[in-house]
Image (cartoon, rainbow, N blue to C red; front, side, top):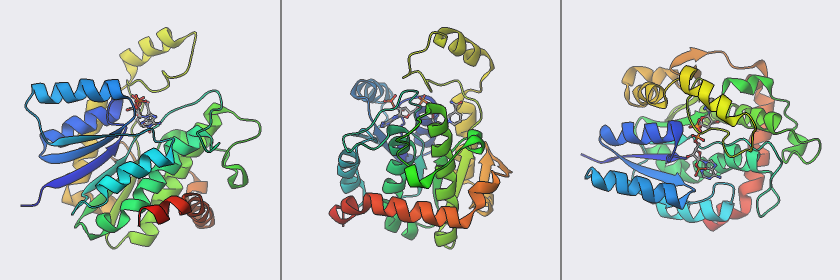
Length: 282
Ligand SMILES: NC(=O)c1ccc[n+]([C@@H]2O[C@H](COP(=O)([O-])OP(=O)(O)OC[C@H]3O[C@@H](n4cnc5c(N)ncnc54)[C@H](OP(=O)(O)O)[C@@H]3O)[C@@H](O)[C@H]2O)c1
């Protein structure tokens, strides 16, 4: 029997790490795209200590297309990609840009995942019952998307940039479903409020307090990882394709997210942004 492959971004912390453990425990080979070398080393030791061999790390900062490009060149020749989980995400309260002057919330949360997905689409397409999971958020409902300034070059607000990126994850999911609904199952998921490291890259005077509250009230990532795993492995969930899920329940996303003109415009603009790199990986 063919080994099942799952590819995940941001598998070193929070929801991503819980998903990595869940998929490994259920006989998947997991390919983990992660940024932080220390975390990669620590997890490698953790898996080796448990005699787990069904994983491979690929180090890349998703903000940098060149780094992601190198990873894509390594994984695009896999025979089958059963599950792709576009999970990595970050909030940048202060505007930061990558080496190509692209704003980082947009680059990490959305564009890198668009690029990864498009680059692997042929393998995903030919894998029977393949799944793409885009980790979005219910905060997409507060987006103020302006596709003429995806780089958020004026009046930057970190929260709005984050909300916009989560709306883009949804628009992208719906578009994938419109194009590939006969061969790929694609879901956009709000994972709920989770007890993770999310947001801790920003300096905050109230971090201790907010982490304390999160520790008590937010959901455990492993709880949500179990639900997402079920969606990715259960035959009955195949008809969830093209849907927005709140954890594992079908829900309605914002009216804007269903706007097909907006989905098409974002798709075209994103294709243009990745064009040079796409030619390199052919
Ligand atoms: N936590 C919540 O309540 C919540 C709610 C709704 C949606 N979400 C979404 O859930 C997803 C997972 O977040 P989480 O809560 O598990 O947060 P987390 O604990 O901070 O995990 C985020 C992961 O993304 C990785 N990542 C961030 N920037 C990266 C980059 N430039 N290149 C490569 N990897 C990068 C992080 O790696 P490093 O540690 O190396 O940076 C980490 O592994 C995100 O998409 C988030 O938007 C979370």
